[in-house]
Length: 322
Image (cartoon, rainbow, N blue to C red; front, side, top):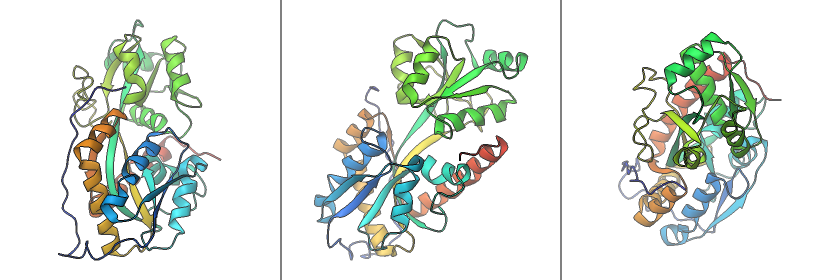
């Protein structure tokens, strides 16, 4: 469990005209789809936000887990829903900006078939190695990888996962050849890393933090734009000369395409206000994330930027999942 951290409360200005955001209210409960099984951070965020919909919008948020196809199933179902504000989905970087390049058919085009509503939180990744191993810094790792192309290994929570692609980005920007070993989830990869059966991983920080704090893993760098308060002594990749190795996995809400602006903006206003409320922000922090809010326009720009970034990484690594 991460220590309580100060939430990053970016207060975006909504785009609705004066009074427009207040003109719409849902006529029935709002269904909130979760692309994964219960327990994932998407699930925790969907439930934290949804449980306050009654107070914010006058109708409850009904959470429904709909896992499948690496999260694409729930996104596709929402893309096909009526654009009336009564169905939204919790989406993340992987669903919207990685899956379209990894799978032949996700069932949706993130630029055409959805309406970005709001981003509420994000996590950064951390590069970790065995604490008592010979690699003690990023330069050590790069030197070892270049001396033994293809011999070093990195673990991830699965092929096409954000930790996998973060490591591919690291390889691309450092000119190294390190072999991927995919696992079914982060926990078994961390176990093998602690045991010395892997060289490294670049995992979501909450997954690795306990091992680092208890001295089993050594953290070499974080992928954020600034150091993480939970690991203040660990530099960012930018500080080490690799500014392009910046990875945040962000989480937000999207609706179907052609969601009318008054509906979109009313949902965004409610979701952002709920996320930034002190009691919700504290619970988001305890779940291992940081509050990081973005309005519809900002989220639209973010999705476009991330599609460009991850499309290049995935094509460059020649990755495809059948």
